[in-house]
Image (tube, rainbow, N blue to C red; front, side, top):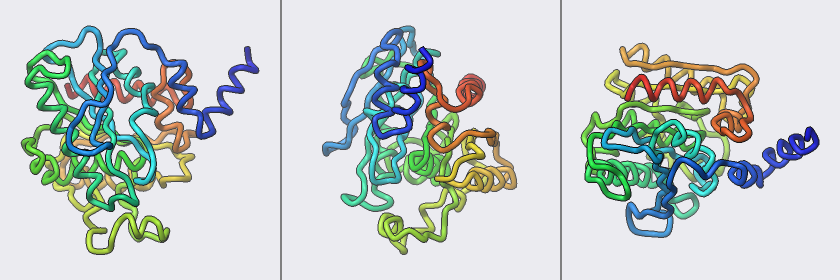
Length: 283
């Protein structure tokens, strides 16, 4: 038995880890509809996890995946969809265009269009939703937290996509880069062209009018410095906004997201507990 657990842990540390985690994730209690369109193009698709008990006031979480803005897919995150759907939340996980096909801010525009499409489908009772008022949350991990963080702080993205400025009930950021200038990596310098670089930083748009935020990072994260979460939290606090900052001892970059898994959580169970408490409080 222990040998099997250790083997699973080793696989999760590799590129096949998400596949294993998803393979042991429950299929019960929710309906998964794949590849719903929110625009034109192969990447303009989202997966929707609807809990069996969904109704006209079920909260909706749009989860934006990570991957350094050049990799990643919605298909890797069934364990996230199941984790939240098992507690009664609808979860939409979109793809978005990646570098080198696009540079900033194209992937943020995609996430905004996906969020607007999900919100409109929920309100109108399409794609399996019951028509009604569905509190809308944004959530992201790593690069996805930067993207979702910009949607929460720079309201022109959602406004341009057809959502009102204060449509969000809350934002949850897991191990996100929100204040990562200056750039030193040549690849990131290409992803974020100089003329738009300052606009890529969520900290630059904080004015106190943001939705409530939950920012979580692990103190063992060597991929995205936890100071990013601290910096955004400090900006929001100084502006008079609502933010909860949680720095979790011993958790690394991957652990911030695998902690959500119900089948084999790797990281800290407290992270899922905090996320669920935040969603309940602000719904």
